[in-house]
Image (cartoon, rainbow, N blue to C red; front, side):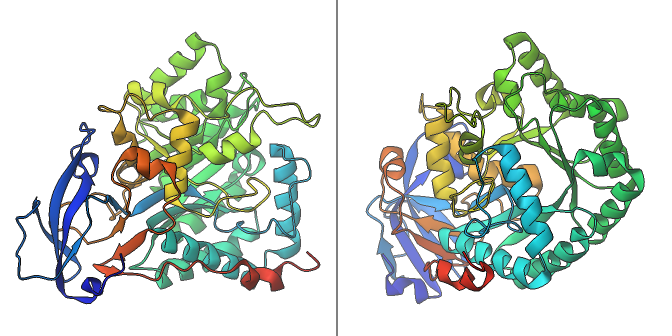
Length: 436
């Protein structure tokens, strides 16, 4: 499909299959057939098949689908690709936490973080991602290293991947007001988002109020890891919603994971969901990582639940929802490659948002338009005249064909031109892996 047409200043993608959900028609489940004219890197026109200027060079897509480039709302590009030197000893969440802490203390100097971060971004770009929000481990001392590196990456990748960052801190740091302020000030200087992580904790109301108050004082948005556990006693999500409502906080608010919601009784879960909707909190689920970690035990018992939150119920209550990659090849998730196509495909299978298809396939927007809107990215992940010609071409002609294969032969178009989709070789990181 990588025809010479893509080197022309103006060309036509003829007989293209475009899901109407990506054309700002989010209630539509159908796929339309269109001619798309691209001029100087911009979508100049979209019309019925056969309507485009016949004098322009053209590529007949034969009903193959066009998808907007992905938006990945929740990643960890600072800790990615450390698995060869720091595997998770037992596959559990606590095992991952301890392994990452040990690796951070031993290895996360500037050159190490910079090289792995760039490797991750090159993978995402080759797969067709145009916008990424990453959480950055911001323990005291580490934040002074990682945020500088992130700001360099944000500048060097501008025009290819739009980047946002969130400071990831734990309960002890959040409850230490001077430490939290120090990190929050660095976040503000870096034009970032304030974050944190908590699940079952006796001080959750105080933790959430501290975060919301600090964000309100400094004019920061919030994006938290919440209730990443199967323990039904976890109440951080409800405490977060309460703090937002009680303070009248007006910034953007996102809660990631929220796994415990699926383990609570119906009355408790629905009461929390109502409170989340009232607070205007968006929820992002990480289906692959949560399935990998949750309900895993040291006795190798088979897991009994999928690990994901109640995404369908949240969406039905009016809560903005998205799915995302989360970790890649680190102790929290041994696999993954920041591939939005994989996230969409596996999300449909794990969360079962593929049926019924009529009206349901706007779920495909959960790795594109929905997170773009939630996070305020300039990349809208939609297809319309006047927008940049940033999209992905596949041979698949239907949702079934799209989801059946990994679409490894996809063509990624950025600013109207086909990019090199060769993925970086893992051997490039061998010098960072030591004896491993």
